[in-house]
Image 1 (cartoon, one colour):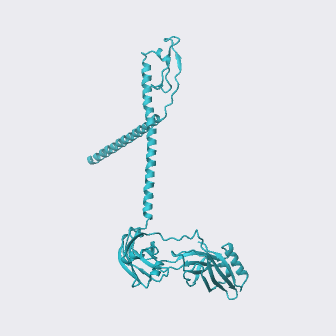
Image 2: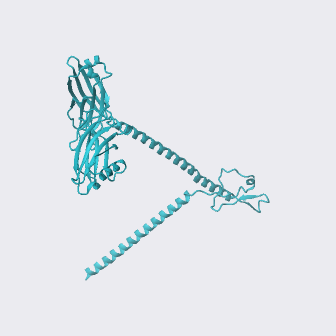
Image 3: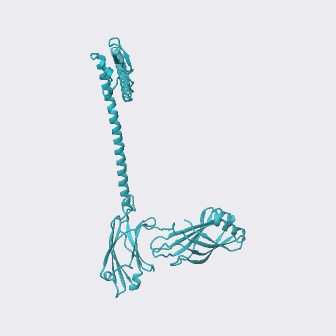
Length: 424
């Protein structure tokens, strides 16, 4: 029984203590919130701009007919101490304690106004600082972009032996190459070399892994080059980065012509360093040329005969001013490629004549659901073949291509040929 009473007393004491602590915490929290609200309210009141009222002249019995004193403003604040005093202020009772209070109040008001000017100046200075910092960052970014746009340099040596009709090319190294593997910040570079315009001599260096400054020191000798041929020869270096899972990435190229070379120095050996330039095609300004094709549809046999006749005014893609074009064509069924053909390569010409015929089987839907896609490409034995232009023929392409297609569909068993401009 005493044990039960003790437990009850202890429980009651614990409950009472818990209630007291809870009440104390709640009251303290309420006081903190009230204090915070009061602080915010005071801060907002102090930050409000001070509105000054022009003092009103009041006549007082003690100062006579010309005696005036300044009335206090509704906010219990008076004019600023640096305001020009009026002539009537000389008649104000100097011993009046209210004037001292008003002066003190105006001084307090001045203290609030002056920091406003400082705050404005500080904001202007801050904005100016932010603007200068932004301009500095833009300049740094521009410098970095210009640095990244550079593709590095190629170092090589040349030596010619006229008695052997041999040209010795030593690829020494590459420096400051851009990374093609962005995750690791490196590349797997190698160099391909081709002698233009014949494109008969082509070599390449070994691949050096994970480096932006590969050192090769590899020598390549080309025989059967006479001095007259050497003057018309151009060295075409292409710097690439090896990729195990897809086509190798092209870093850039270097073109070197022997036209202005001193052959006396060349017989001894010359060392050269050239900037690596981006490999780009300037096709927009010169146009992409035209392609002439002939079509014949045979409904009974469900066959479409396509004859690639010729092309004209193709752009000069190669650095020597010539191209090696060929045509690749696809049969489209509901915008899906279901068959492909290609012509032979025509060497060193921008006006090739192909005259090659291809036959495609047409589905039961007829010509309404199919189309043809042509690609004119420039063959390159060193790098990937460049696309010169594209042409699509079908019932929903519009323009001259659609007109040609409808004419073929409405005139079965007739061979109809037309010229078409190549697009991007």
